[in-house]
Length: 404
Image (cartoon, rainbow, N blue to C red; front, side, top):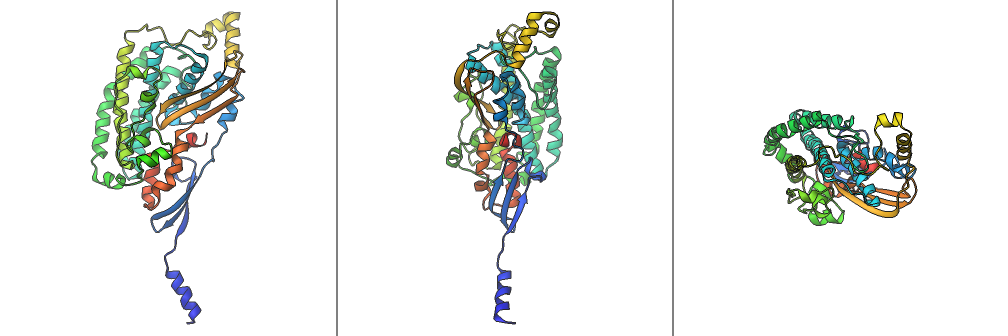
């Protein structure tokens, strides 16, 4: 064997890395996005995220639509908790026009948003379990997400992409069936959540897979502009509902769960605790509503609230108002506003510039997923490939919100 051949043989025995694609259609990504990973055996050396596979140009579409018709676009951001997106948009318009919203409407909105938060956290935490090999919790808790969807369906006729509510409040009042489904949920959900925690919280295998995986410090999380459960898991107690209250959240008593290490296990625990806090808020809202006029479900704003369907069919004035509202014939004030809400994944914000026309002059969605996903390469570098997958689950990256 020549010296050249010996050198080639030695080089082939040296450590080599492999480049792999995780996504855009791999089931472990839980959405249509890609990571080009360089791995050394099972250890991640580096990763390069690729996004934009389902970019739908929502912001530019919104600039060509009347304000009333933008709500369905917001459904398709974080579709696991669509009502929060819908109500956040309605709050933005109401802030621009200076609309006063009745207390009962605000409390009804709080109930819907906290149900949406629970539904989102159910998905996230049960999927973390699946990615660590535990399918049972996932199949067990999903029936409770269905119960939440049944409440949505009773209120607005839709389940996943809800288009729930209207500028100024709700399209119709909550029915007796909706209230009954809500009471059944708040009575039964705590028992299920306790069982879910019993299955996972102190499960040795689950803890070994999650503790120490994908950690991030509070300083780095703030540098990346993290918000929501991913920031609170790192130890920062920032919550839009407390720091910039909207929809009368200042009327409720609840805690802000925080973690310490910002790893997968902390993110799981924070979301679990947030479900308990959301349940506490819902129960308070139900009690507060009891003393208010049961017939109020919308602000007194005829320029934004559709007339009764029967009136539209029989009265010219109602028909005219229906047309004007749907087609955006009511001009909005000139102005510039930013309204944020505490989405299930963090601060969801709407930056709106109005030139007084029937459509926004400029509209920007602040999507929490888009912001914290930038940290993914850093927090999985040096870890195992399997840790990278479970870290992605714990961040709860929703492709619809990521791309918009």
